[in-house]
Image (cartoon, rainbow, N blue to C red; front, side, top):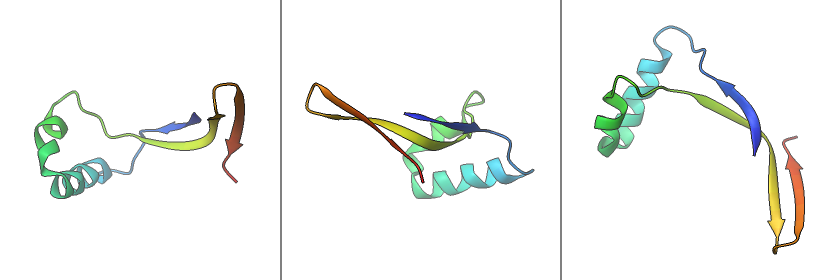
Length: 62
């Protein structure tokens, strides 16, 4: 997998994402509330896929 990492959000965006995540998945509340937890985004640009154990190929995002 290859992609681009983002953590530069507009002010207040991370808190909004955290709130929505906890609303949808309340069991993640403790995890999301940890001071070391960070909201990030990853845009996937390519995947390495296998067809069996010997055939390997890449798919890229259009």
